[in-house]
Figure (cartoon, rainbow, N blue to C red):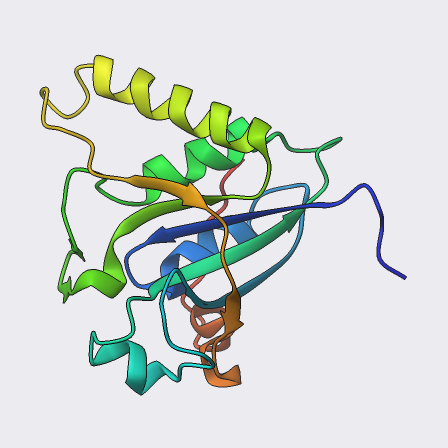
Length: 163
């Protein structure tokens, strides 16, 4: 039975493997799933998204208990997991599918995401480089193929803790 108090958050920050592993380490996160969101093509596969023609971003859908972890804490994990000044790429991954994006599920999430982005823009963290992260309404989430789920854990490469 699903807990009615759980909430969802969806983030894109480059390749979804490392982003998922980071969120799985946060106390209060009850589940994660990697997948695709923000595109214009139904039921995309990994190959479809990698071709760059579907408009989807690789994302992590996070289910969390707000009594244990706040949305702001999840935003901090998101901001710390990637470089939000890089447009359409993170490290070696290049393409629109690797963009920095927050898909908000509620008006409160939208306000908090925009406020955290503004705070980051006003800090000296990125030497006044613009934050290119999109903040958009959540759209259809398509779960990625099973071999992508918890990929780093399956390969013994997700041993760090956050939060």
